[in-house]
Length: 253
Image (cartoon, rainbow, N blue to C red):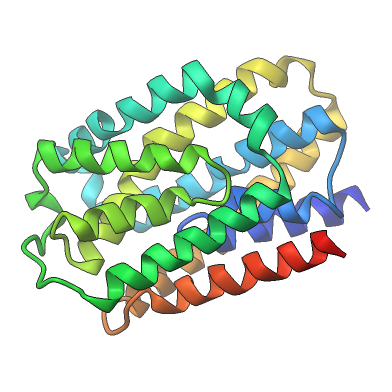
């Protein structure tokens, strides 16, 4: 049963990490039915993101060569989230990691996505390499909203990019690059905190979740990049609102 749980959670992570729907929010919801011990679940949910990171590195492998301009901007952009996460991460996790908070964050985020897509501005930035350091930092600041579970790191950075004049493709691509240092830091911290106490069985389950997350995320990234070439993000806005309402109805009952 634990292997099945690890596989399902890996699928959820891979499907949702790079879509603007909140992987953390989905995992919090799914964890109401499928989870491990409380401490290992926290570590598992964070560390399987490394599988999704590997998918980004492989999908954009041709961009890993010098001059690394977009990587430098992504590293600079992630600094605000690292600082706020270090200062308030534990407090946020204790106070806000609940289905109710996730539901409201999904709904509000969905409304914001619909509002941004309703009046799209002609993009001024059509190449990811053209993103300035200033705009990268602004996107990084907006990404900090994703510390609230259900907001979605991808949604925050993509919407932020769109508001700053990036095309959908550029906003999504920069979001992917920004995800790498963000999730490496979060996963590394989680491993240092809980990995030393991990049993062999837990390490095996983590490996299962990692592999499944990687395979699913790799497929999702390619499909998502093809999708946004001809379509907007409104379907994700409506999905967020619908899921948030369903969760609130379930909680009310």
